[in-house]
Image (tube, rainbow, N blue to C red; front, side):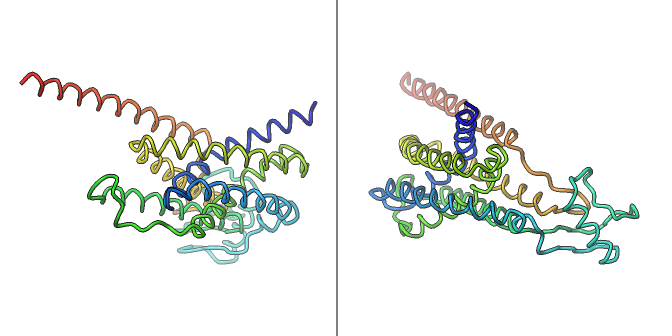
Length: 292
């Protein structure tokens, strides 16, 4: 009974943590020719499932390597390098209790930028920066369109490139879900593997529905891109937190999932209200024109 409950929780965990990844897959797949979009989504997610299982075994074996700092950034410090290194070690080994790094003597590190980067933080930061770039590029492209529905000036993205991006981003999103699953299932590889496969199948099924919805309701494309923008911000803050990054002595804290979903909810509600209000205004204007 406990095993069944744990498996259900793991599947739910994979589904919840995969929502932002699902949106990226749906938007990215639209950049290839229409006839191959469904194939790209399924193949990309399918390959990512296999690589995610491989990643699970790698993380279990090398979990300490992923969290061990290998690069320290210290820019503008006004204390000795020896004290700064000691403070970085303290920040890595203990939970942060304040927004400032301190040396053993109690003096503050007045550096402009301080951080201790590990492999996990680097991967998350790169993923967040790439998603942020993708969202902004698509938003500017959408604004610059001379006519809606005509993308003749934009060539379809190659299928291989799109699948590669989907797989890579899926792996980046996988780190949190795998680490959370390891803690929840007490490193039970069999249960975690089953949850990854089931979660991947759900993503394949849901990706078609999400993509179909976005294709039929193009006014929500902007909403989807801004959600993707927030996903990028969330990953950047998480990566900075993993790197114990401080700017002018202030720690960067990660955006929590609660905050993320709250912001998404506000965006969705705003979009719905604004769309209905716009339709009402257009209807009133049409009625006024008809009277004259």
